[in-house]
Amino acid sequence: MKNKALMGYLSIAVAALIFSTQGIISSVLLSYDIEPLSLAFFKTFFGAICLALMMVPLRRKDFQIRRHDLPRFVVYGIVGVALFSYFFFGAIEATNVTTAITLMYTAPAFTVIFARFVLGEMVTLRKGAAIFLTLAGTLLVIVGYDTTALAFHPRGFIMGILVGVCYGVYNVLSKKYVQIYSVWTVNFYSVLFAAIFLGLLKNPVPLIMSGEIPPAGWLFVVLLSFLTYGVAYMFFIYGFRHVEAGRGSIIANIEPVGSVILAAVFLKESMSLIQMAGFILVVTSIFLATREEPAVHDEQVSDPLEKTLVYKNEVR
Image (tube, rainbow, N blue to C red):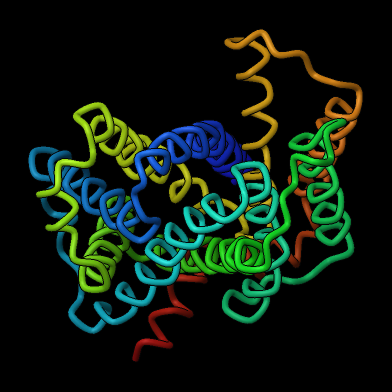
């Protein structure tokens, strides 16, 4: 169990590092005057295609799901994927990448709350401390000395908070559904229903026919879709199979730290003392989140078989 939990934490960390490229790519695409709703559709649409192309030769049996689970996947895809993408792009457009990412990482708090009611995970003092440290550390890492990097805009602020809410819902439902279906199944149907929902809200044909998006723009869209759904979400969902949703969401906050480290390595950007302090806070929060709770608690919330049986009883 300990080895599986370790693999779960590592998988979520890898996913978070891949996600760290999302804000930069998204800002490039929004510079082409693509509306957030349209960009969210194209991201999920090409994401569903990427997953289908990989599943047909490798995991064809994972297309099968129980008919009565379809409504659950529809809700999962709309809230956890479609609305998350729309609110994220909308927050970037109304404010900036820094503000959007900072607000997105209110997600651990929402995840812990939702996990308490949906999965029965306990809200412990250790989790509360870890959430506080990760929020403070994330803010310091992203902003550093330049507090003007945070741009306040009422609509952007609301959308940013809603990103955190949707992210929390996605984390909890990923944990719930991955106990029954494979990572491939959960990822594909969430993205598919997200694309269908967004396509109904925004007709993409006029934008495609207008030619406003250059070939380089389409390459960025496909790259964003593949990195997000074809790679990162696979690691992300797999990780949540083996760890608590609340703990996993705290580990995911390594994403902004990864962004700063990548910038330091590839762009030769220096890390300020305040950013280093934020890095230490995030690492400390991860240490708290990954420490084992008392044995009774672990058995109560972390046993995949127990979660599966509970869920199946709910379905019946």
